[in-house]
Amino acid sequence: MDAPQQFQEPGFLSWRRTFPWLHLLRVPGITARIPILLVGFITSYLLVTIDVITLSITGSEHLPSFRELYYQWDQVFFEALSPNVTFYFWLQIVAGFSYSAYFWNLTFTLLVHLISGLLICRLAASIFTTGESTCLERSVIMSIQKFPSVFLSFLFPSLLIFFLGGLGYCCIASENIPQIGPWIAGILYAPAMLLFFLLIVFTLGVMLGWPLIIASLMIEDGDGFDAWSRSFDYIRSRLVSILFFFIICMGIGILIQTVVGELSQVTWNWLDRLVARVSGTTLVEVANRDHATFSEGASGFQNLWKTLWVCGVDGFLRSYYWVSVVGVYVLARYSVDRIPTTEFLVDDKKRPTT
Image (cartoon, rainbow, N blue to C red; front, side, top):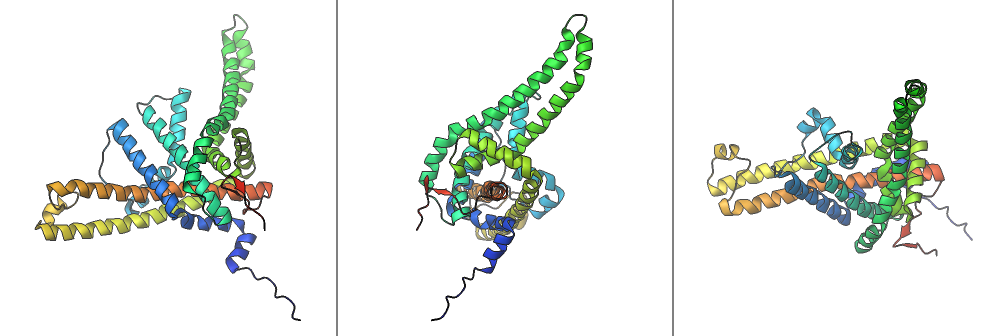
């Protein structure tokens, strides 16, 4: 009787097992799933609507391009990190370090990012770990259930920030004590420096790592304290590797979106020339306008479809951001806690074993 043949795993599985961070190359394919793209599209459309309502900014249709990426790479990169950047400016206003008339715009924008993050993290985590997609309706229900836990998870770092800031302020405020106050404040100046230094470092950690809290809530199905403690542990022990691989992953996403934007612009230009030929408009007249139109009545529909197309292109990067967060979280989870990347709770129940 022949001996059973040895199990042969595919080459890419062997490479991923040897180099776990290669799993991040799956992020573009996972982002391209229809449910995740749909959530990203709705997110982008809601952000446009918020700008129109709160800032009265309508703007023209805008597509990413390689020219913009070359000359304004920093602006493009920070736009890709919109959840972190929005949280930073919102935190500055809440802490009283700056004043902005865009407070409600930032608040609603951050709220949209939170909701879309909960949904996409749940959908992406199941695909990333098990290869199976959870039900979109079930993910929506779970996101609603986990929404109070989001605020609970932010309660602990907020209390710590308030505690460090309060102690530092007391050290400086001791100067108001009659006669001996300046002497006490001078002695306590060194502890105040240390306290405010720790405050700044911890605040930067929260600003960079809060998306991991969202991923932890939807992957681990735990409470706010568990999500906060896990995220803090991963940031503390794997900060450099998390930032390094996340930046590389986001760079790939920006390049993909830019290629799609360039192809979309070529499509628009081709259609504008075709419309100009059909409607009898000269190319000079088309060049003096943003785009060619069939007629005054049809221009509204034309602008609508272009706006939806731009939201689709922009929505890809919105989804790509959260899928990257999930990928980095799962791999940091494996690196720190040695939890297999295939372990995940599907539809709120553990996968049945056979």
